[in-house]
Image (cartoon, rainbow, N blue to C red; front, side, top):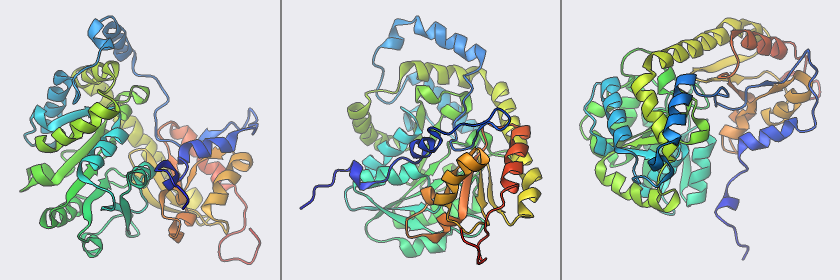
Length: 400
């Protein structure tokens, strides 16, 4: 029998794979590469935060192991922030700090799933969620979404079996950008609560939601302590991607199980990153509001420029947070289109095939645009390049 390791059971990480497409490609000065492949800010943290981090480096405790579930002050500050944002009462014992939001997801799934269990993921999905489930021996059950990229509770209900343990949602969504309506979340919450499942809502991009006020009332619903798990990342809010600070909001009993995972894998989240996140929560609310305004302007720029592409047969399927999800008009599948865009258009974007099952034809029709690092003018240049593509269209007899 051929031995297959846990890592061999899943696919190559999409972002590193896509970055290899630019190896050896020269981009002329008048048409530099437009990289819209990754949802990570490339600018450093703001200067006041960098100064606070420099001061933290002089504190001996910054260089030591900390509490497994996070610094008490950070847990308390995030609990207060979460309570205010969601108009709910969250205590610090419901907060765990992790080495990034990916680890928050991994720790949560390790605490609730065993080999052969099933988890529902809406399609298109966030690929690292799928990768971790593969490596954990958990079966991913694709949950179809509608033309607005929204999952439906009735569809999900039909997919639940005795092995189902959780439904995972990302809102605002990665890769689709869609902000899930409160009623969509409520319906899926009711399903999870009624069937004894865990509803995991990854809210990494909550700080860039275009809506004002709480995006949902799940924390105030009956049974929320037993049903709901929320995930969060400080990386996008405070530009701390390299410092790996995420969070879990869950019942204390579940965090006791998560503590086993954390102690084994990381012992604690990086201390410098935690202290930076705490300083950010306490001091950068006004700065973060400005960051949100800038992202919302880039989102508006996508909508403003979309007529250029719509005239060429493109469709905007989802838009929000850091992402636009586009249906392309070309005869070739997206996994061929993506590499072709690099030398011929100077654009690096991820094909929809990286966010869907291999058997799902929708992946071949879509591209994800991550626009966190291009301003309004950059959005215009990107759309001009895409609109200029004169390639054979789907439904024609011309060869691809």
